[in-house]
Image (tube, rainbow over all chains, first blue to last red; front, side, top):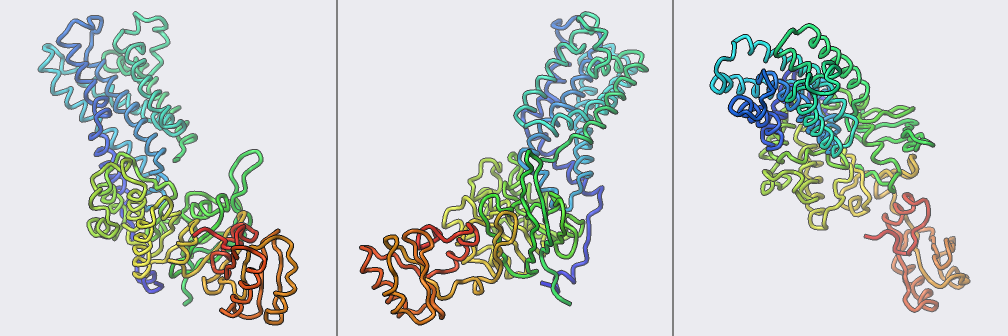
Length: 242
Length: 312
């Protein structure tokens, strides 16, 4: 016993390796779960089809902006909030706290997995969009990617805020409700201008993502960075591992 | 060089916020040996889980000192060489045991083989079933596998045998004994005296957040004591005269007598007590106090309610 302890020098796997191990684990469990997959890629692709091939939503002028907001909210908020909340409920973060996995590598790995999921969704949409909608300007894709990146930066901390404070069952309800309300009444499917309180919506992430994707970017970018800042401060103060 | 202890607590206190705060550990002094199997007993709320969580680095004490393998709890070195099985398992419900163990193995510099551990804990038949659909016994075995996969020098196990049927429990006892045979030091929190008789090289009992009793099972086994149940308020003079000189009889509570003899109880003494008891009670209930009775007293802070003490 004592000889075994003395003989084994204490070794560690590098931080980046551990973050990568966790990112792969999150991706594996996310992409196998039907509901998560529907949120991450299903809804954005169905929306792209509906917006480009039907007249159901004729008020929308920029289909890519709508899909960008859906990818941001699905991959960056609702899906991770639900899975993080259930990891907390199961106590698996507590267990990981007893292993060599640092807390920071769990957070980095989770964020990395969110980014990869969102990029895969964006890549699928980017590949399908030119086929479905003729006449999309190549510049639209620049706005599309910028909107997704900035949108993720803004909403991912809020996924941690919600998942890190509420019970898993409440998170399931609230995260899905936020997704629906944001898409319908947040200035995404119905343009903010045709909604009451449209002016207020410009200061919320969904409409700001749509604006970054389709128009002048300065103000909505600041709005998104502001949400990112407040969310990060709140997340670091309130997140509970179990 | 002396072997480092698995756990050393000095004046360790811990309380949970509330009005008033809930005291979990109240100045605990405890030394757990760095080899063999130590069983940690105590009633619900005695502080077992709080101590194990503090030792795992999951909770901090409010005052006092705690070291684990000679290091502060939760140190990077300890996280690499200490395996932990939490009371609620801490297993992700949607994951499958095999993939989860593969994931956990990747966190350690020198893990054990996942296939070998799956065989060892006998979960091959459910290795691809989502963890939330496993039986209680299967889930405990997966948690045990996760504690071992990193090839630890020591493990902390919080109620590994809880909710196991007797067959599953004795199989886990065998597995734990085999692991101890490989040189892994173990601290096992449990409610079951059965775990102590099957496994323990050393026993600690917590009561109200303090150490109530500690020693090897041999040291703790009561000597020269018989517990008997008979009608209340008997005059035991006749019995006392028949026993070796220096013996005492105490009625611990109405109808429960504790006979103490200066030497170890032998069959002749048991015979004397039984025949005296038979004169007064239709069904004599006479029990030579064993380790279970001693542990019960330490856990409860009072003698067992029945002469036979703890249910076994």
